[in-house]
Image (tube, rainbow, N blue to C red; front, side, top):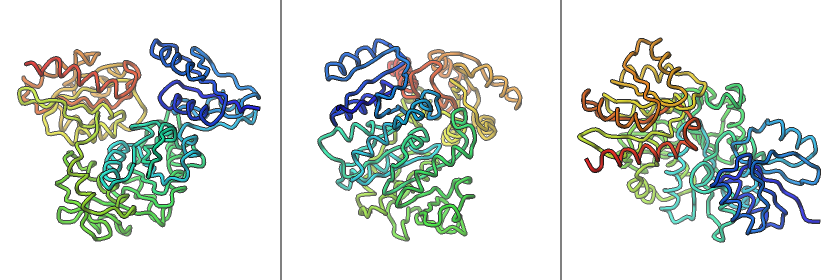
Length: 451
């Protein structure tokens, strides 16, 4: 009798999971609560391939189903998933499914609150420069199941993994696990900081080799007791995180791995102390994989950065317009502000998240001559700015108005940059942070490239 699988979520990962299961001989139903025109187009293509697609559908568990695969956006403790488990339906995430098909390949799993995407992109670039077929996947690049569908089997799987993907991947065990940073985020889903930490820690504990950012205060407090075999990194030198002994550090302008000079820090073309931290993590992974330092240096010199993370869109009348749409929480937005030369006109707002905003507000005081507020969070952000005696803000509601007003204010205040660094999720006005960043880029190009 043919095995029955149900996949929830008609995004990139859900579609890849459905195709992979069908290829493996499963009878597959793919469902989504939404029914947009885009999803209807995808429905037609999938049904032509023999996959049943149900739009506007609320999944109801039944004993006929042998496997339930959920996309990352579905809460792992959702009542419908609890009902499925009560019926003994095996319930996993899309990344776990990919692992089951690619477990004979070495995986490099990268997690953390911030820095995941840049570290993943840097690491993939280094491994590719060394001649490996090492595509980036997960939250960046391909859905993990797309790699399992590809006829060209990867030499390494370089996976950016959020807490959502980790909690739904109970057996995923990378060869190398990287933890970039840890600060409060996603607490509306994970409830407590301890739960959030524990989820990320499971990935590292299942990794054969562990790399942790020694510059991160929270990770460092966990120290050697929690991670006795970990490879630590430090941008501040070999002695800065004592008693921990870093494997990789910066000394005399060089990144050193176990004392060997790997690459000059000036080769990295991205600004900010946080990007040096990302660089050290990627170089450590390369060192553990025994990649030649010359190949590491070549990859870093050619690496231009990642879209939506301090991405310089254009310069207009001496003002840099910078897309930092990926800064979806206070900590990432504070890092973005610190990396940009003052004075800055800041565009912030969107769908608000829980978190500690104090360092972000201090950075606004130090760096921003004006703050333009957009989206659902605008009124609350305005109130918060008033509470810390910052009155140089305007509620402009939309990104269209923010770009135009940002240009006017930058000119009148001699600002160096107009920075989109929202400190919020995007879902109040956009499909994703990429959609928001693409719109910002488009608006800048329309308004200023012809000027």
